[in-house]
Image (tube, rainbow, N blue to C red):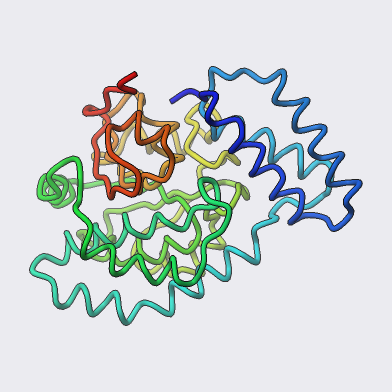
Length: 291
């Protein structure tokens, strides 16, 4: 997906939020925004929104010296999600198919996204459990993904936001053991998970962990490490969480299975699913916007 006009106000909102998180100095906040607007006036808009956001994040870090403005927020979201583990375990134990229940939890957990939203409350996080059970699952047949998971020797799971990684953990527990690598961001990017965040969520107890070498809030293949690119191409199955990964990989050179919650009108338009939907979608089924 390339950036559209609708993306520009959202990118400015995120830049403002980062400026406020990194400094209390209003003059410095204004300087950050001046530089961001100058950057956006010259940047190539034929790129995905996360690629542009990466440039904004680097600019803010260069001005303030703060490379992880969302550190405290990420920790708070992860601790809140960890406190919900007993409820998640109960949902899985009571389900007819723990794989599908885990899949629903993982997608519902994608609500923890500060790229698409200005804030995420405790009630939002708690509500994901109810939504995981009640909302319809749109897109592909989850039993087909289950079949692919059971037959894959090497699975690459692309994580998204800190906090929702706890939900991912319960889903990955339903996979065959010792076959999954979870890839996170190579450096801080919005509230996306890094290795530190993934370990705090306990993902290292269910899968091998690696970082992708990139600081984009998505998976921009050209910006990732050689090790990651080789695993991306060589894995039997790639599962990608979140809108950012959908935006950056919907036209990838290989099949990718996306799990995400639709949280903006542009992604709704591109994917063909309404706002709020829980979506499981293979890249071979992505046709692009209907306009």
